[in-house]
Amino acid sequence: MLKIAWNENFCHSLPQGHRFPMLKYQLLPQQLLHEGTITSINIFEPRLATENEVIAIHDQAYFRKLTTLQLNRNEVRASGFPLSKALVTRELYIIGGTKQAVDFALKYGVAGNIAGGTHHAFRDRAEGFCLLNDIAVASAYAKTYCGVKKILVIDLDVHQGNGTAKIFENDTSVFTFSMHGAKNYPLRKERSDLDIALPDGTGDAAYLKILGEYLPKLIEETEPDLIFYQAGVDVLATDKLGRLDLSLEGCRQRDKMVFRNAFINKIPIVFNMGGGYSEKLSIITEAHSNTFRVAQEIFY
Image (cartoon, rainbow, N blue to C red; front, side):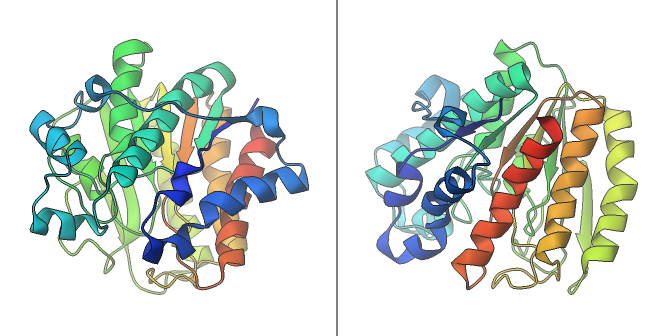
């Protein structure tokens, strides 16, 4: 059974000026339910992550400053959001959803979070609309409590997963793979275990060829017990913040390649939505919906 984390805080707790692109968090479950891809039984409401869960990855002093709204002006600016209690609560629900998705993926093979993929958050600071790193915290949970020994992070958002890369730079149990736009944010990239930086305008054929060459080898070489998949759809040609040239079908084929490789190798996979900033909300929703459709198609 495909289990999906969703909470109304994913959308409604965002600052007013940031809500339009994030309406996808509200529209996505509605679309999936309407078309019959999922039913209400597939959706679970995550619980809030606890301080102990978060500080398994994040610096405790930073976490305390964040939760008491004591970040300084520069730290708030780097986060991209005006800081609020509601925003911090949102991040804790996102982490809770990704962490619980680990349990469901280990049980059913695959699970997702309609939000999540906050891959720009570092141990001690927020960056790029990411306050806390849900993939990193969920990885720590999987290793500590679920018997997972090796993790592969497949980050296919158009922006490099710099926070995740830095957090795990000295952790050989977590292999970080980021395939992203070379000239996209962040300007200063961190070093993942494997980075593939793509030139502007990379389209379906080139993108899928490169991913198809690397992905099976990565899985064979790293032998992961669990995969985290950052399924950002800001790789689309229509994306305002991306510089690549994928079509909706190319993005769907990308998802299919990732899920198929996990399925045939019998590796549980947790996926998060990541970025998506096309001007038309319908395109964002359709691209993200494809990720869930493909997961359902391949695993069930």
